Amino acid sequence: MQVRFVTPSYRADLERAVWMRRSVRRFLHEPCGHVIAVPRADLAAFRQAFAADPAVQIACQEEVVDPIFYPDRLYRLVRALAPSQAWRIDLRGGLPGWMVQQIVKLQCTQWVGDGAAVLVDSDLVFTRPFSLAELGLGAEARTRTLVRITPESESSRHRTHLERSRALLGLPAGPTEHHYMSSPSIWYADWVAGLKARLERVAGLRWQQALFRAQEFSEYTLYGVFVEEALKPDALSIRTQPFHQIVHDRDSFQQLQRAMLEPEGLRSGALSLVVQSNIGMPVQDYQEILEAIIQ
Image (cartoon, rainbow, N blue to C red; front, side, top):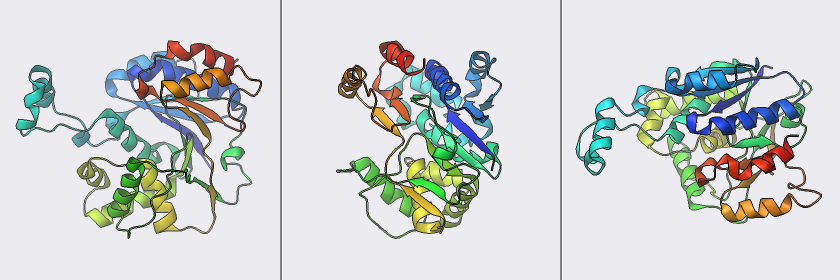
C-alpha cells in the first residue's frame, strides 16, 4: 500500500512546517513521501525551504480546491477599504483558509493513489521514534485504524460537527459524546472516495459545492462518521487514545514547560506534540522545547 504524509500549510506556518519535517526525518526510519499543499502565492517560499528534502513534494492548493472557496478580487478590495460594508454587496466572499485546508485534506486521494494518507498539520512535531506499522500501515496489517475519542466532556463544537456530518451524509441522529480528532490521522483513499461520493448523492451537488454550502464542517468528523455509521467495514480497528499531546492555550503551554523538566517529559506513549498555531504563540516561544525533542 502506498503511504504518503499530507500537510496543508501556508506562509505564516512555514517555520512550523520546517520543524514538523525535521521531526519526521528524525523519528521515521522508513522511506515515505510527503506532500505539502500551499496557496499558489506561497509555492516559491516552500520550495526554497524544502529544496534539500527529496521526500517532499510542494503542491498547489488552488489546483485541487474549487474556486468558490476563495474570495473574488472585488470582495477583497471592498474588505480592505470598507470591511464593515462588505456584507452588503453580493460578492463571493469565500471561506477562511482553515476551511480551505480541510478541502485539501479531503483531496489527499490526488497524491496517494489507492493507498493511505497520514495527515499532519504544520503545528505538529513527532516526539519519539515510530514506524508506519505503529500507525496501522505496516505490510502485515489486517485491519484499518480509526481514532475515536470519548472525552469526559465533549465540546459544543464537536457535537455540532457530528450533527452536521450526519445531515450531510443523510444519516439519522446519533450520539455526540465522541470525536475523531487526532494528529496524525490515517485516512484510506478508497474510504475518502466513498465519503465524497456519498456527499454528492445526498446533496445532488459536487462534494466541494455541498461542503461550501454547509459553511462550517469538520473533515475529521465527516470521515469518522462516514466510516463508522455509513460504511461500517468489518476490518476496522478503533483506537480510543489520540496519538498526540496538545498545547491549546498559554496554561497548557506552561504545563508542558514544567513537564519537560521531568524525566518522562511528554505524556507517556504520546507520538506527537501539537502546539496549536491559532493561539498566537510564535515558534520562538517554544523553540527550546522543540530543540530538546528533535536532537
